[in-house]
Image (cartoon, rainbow, N blue to C red; front, side, top):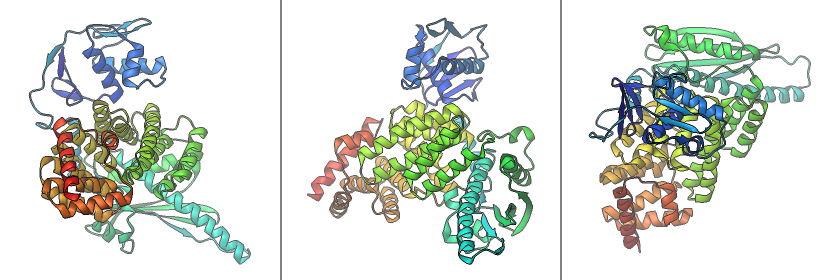
Length: 541
């Protein structure tokens, strides 16, 4: 539905607010508040009702709601004094008082790309940049120490430097992605060890990156110095290099300075107005940052229990720091995906609830965090089953960081379960464009298999599901979809193989599981999926 008032259009199918046909950037919660007021324009909407609908009943202060109302008014060139379109009913709620015309959508959601989709396409057409793993080098001498003590001390320093340089690379990837003007290869691909023996330019070329950032952290006499280089992999030439003395108090400045110089070197045609950072905000407390980076390091090693403990410590040290909440949400998503892959519905459900809580906090603390919006979109999809709010957060994440493979992954899920299979396939295809070594490639392949299956393209579905199983034979989700595929292709051998594999893995296809983890909004898709399942069971019996 599209609602027209004055020169504005509020498009709830495309999740856009437009003026004169041009999209206006608004935060997801602001869009939801505005939509609720416009849809209920015949009455005053109580504050409590808005909070229940937009924040799912979570306890939020009046100031939070007031700030969203203020932002909605600003987007409409309204304010609290004029109240031309949004009227405050003091002590009770709000009412939309503009003259509204309702227009049913004539075109499909995929007839024209959204502003977010157009921006992503433009960015992904540009050369790719990779931040390769930074190296460490300890040149301290023995200083007369016992050899055993010397060895223990060096091992301790090496471990500390390892997570420190990993953290620098992680933050630099985020910093560069925040510029939003060229694709940034994800950490999983940049850190892939299969090309570790190659020189930097060859390694970047093997990853499909034209530009690469490399670095080395050296110790000497107790001091730490970071050397950074930017190279062009096509010509094997160094474009820029610099050295930085690593001091905790100056880390945020150093980080921004490195990213600024890299951006200036590879995108000189862009104006200063176009280069403002929008994702990451400077943070002066290195202790909370240090804990967060340790937690992220542990999460990448699948030590979820210790990661969450470290990250929760970071939130206690600095309750206003958004990044640890985003990483907590990401850890919860990892737990949920692991539970689904093993067919453990209850474990995944609990993890998704934790994801919702952490992602909500992250977005509240930093509305410009692409990671927070990505994880919030996953929570809205899998916990609240709110496709409009999930779409809003996914769009915002991709606007903030078109290189975010995780955002493309989740966005594709939202499109697919909402019923737009073409958009789902295109979006998840972008995952491998920005991240050929995406950490959950087997999950994306299983998803692509599902979307092609629902489209009736059984050959492509079979190929994607084979790839998923080859990447992870224990992936319950891929086996479930192979069962449905077998039903439609009348492949008794595949049906027996996939059913046996699912049983061995402890997976299930009962109605409760299907309802919780396959939230099809298009009735024909749910019907088709269940028909294939029934046919496969007959073939395999």
